[in-house]
Image (cartoon, rainbow, N blue to C red; front, side, top):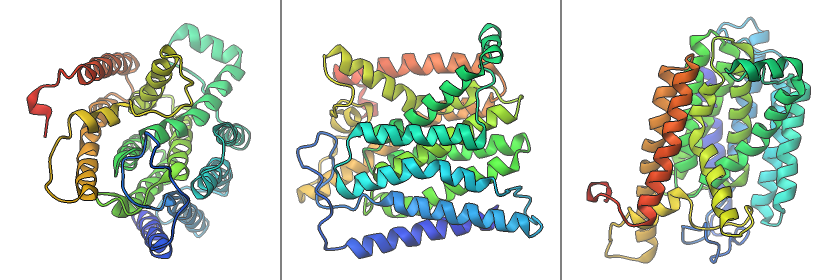
Length: 367
């Protein structure tokens, strides 16, 4: 797996460098300065999804070739890995087109992520066989279409959840990297080396992208990158639970509770204000941390001040993510413990959000 991840890292990093070089001095599709989710100055390419997709496809394909050559690294990747690529492509390409044009309506991008979910159910036979609660699990056995509907919801929604938290240099990328490594750890714990190989490749290509994304923000993941992270992580999470009875279905829920709850809370918050859930705003948790906590002052140009404040925002959310990843990895086979931590996170998130909104933030949290 080491050499495969190294290749994925290099392909992604070199492709990202080429994109930055090719677009240097050229005007990228205009990202309106008035958009509330914009927290950078200047024209930065939003084509990181291309680097991620290329690195992922190359590393997965080479893993299949190695397996067919005798599998000296015990990757256990068959031709079925190409079905994973086919399933990822609709969402990834839809996001990349949006990054190139800034003109693809959200309903089309939702349709393409849904298409990725349909392909995953059809080509990979993904399903949710259990939820860790006896009476619900009985329903899933009697009506497997319910599990398929959950799969479609997860694969359709998680890419957009990653897109929501993709607001600052290194934020979504590092969250995706941390979650991917946690998934890989549990895959190896249950000896599911094929899934482990797939998700380690995602971690590697994400690392190659982060070289250029953090701290300087020379390249953004864009919708394409967020959709790739969301689709692949959702597919691996579902497949891990489906193939390994020892893994609690609440393990990936706790692992992903930050982007999931950020999305659900955002929908609730907008509906409560009478605003469409699809309307962008600047009231997400990471945006409030930027505005209320990251208050360092730099006595030079505006661009540098914004860049430095941008860089200081992401570590807060990395730490926030670790609060869920650590217990998820420690208790990956204990359903009720994982459920309790999910509830604890929801309460902690709401309390922290309200404290920040009301300016009741302890001084030790401020930089």
